[in-house]
Length: 118
Image (tube, rainbow, N blue to C red):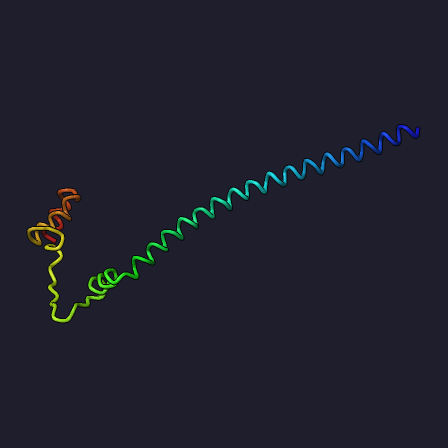
């Protein structure tokens, strides 16, 4: 009787140790996958950081500042004159009608005729 009680206690203790060991292995495996996710997220952020650092260096150059001032703000150097061209010249068309014809080329013929008259 006493021997079977000791065997029973040893089996219970061994089972609880085995269950805890399996839980620990599962927990560690889960943390490993989270670690991989965090590592890949870190690498993405590191690449984005490098790109933003390069962009910051680029936008701080005098050439870029002048380009933005000319193109987006319409500013000029003293003594310069701004010449505004129609959109069809800027886009390389020979005339305004060529620009319209190019826009209509994707439409079916009947819609081109409707657009022409109405």
